[in-house]
Length: 203
Image 1 (spheres, rainbow, N blue to C red):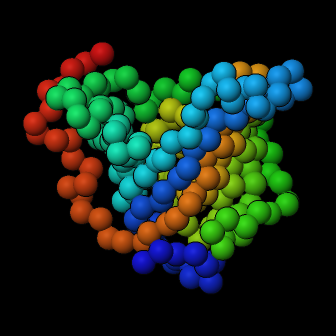
Image 2 (cartoon, rainbow, N blue to C red; image 1 turned 180 degrees about the vertical axis):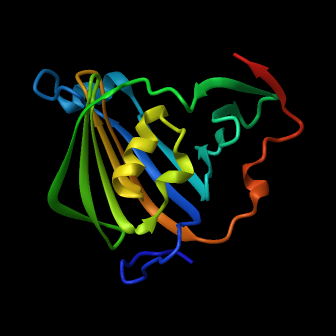
């Protein structure tokens, strides 16, 4: 069931799938034209399919790469689907790579997939990140209390909601990840297990 209206409100935590389109844009249009930047950089769009269930999530990128978060070990495992190796410890959920300097709430809202989203701006040492979120897509911050990578717990502590759009800006990067559809469904915990056929390698 695809959800495209905020009239359907969740009373319990979100469980299901959110599909995002991620685009990398020209970070300095005042210095280089969008057309020239695009010609130099080439295709910069990918699709991310996030599965959420309690304190578990996984992300399938372009049906080629996969990330799985394991809450017990607080690690994010990464591998290419066509590869026999899983690399662990590349992403340690307990470490934030960019400490926060300030948090700002913005009254202005934006409609995404029929959901009225509020804005939250994180300013950190390296970037400014704007989140668009709706309380209808509830996720408890306590599920990810040890997940500081990407300031995920810090974001959830402020919102207890999934983001439907994330905009990251710094002098080298302008990234926008926007939800293009949402599917509410009960997921099996098997969705979040590492494939037994893969060889585990610490990096």
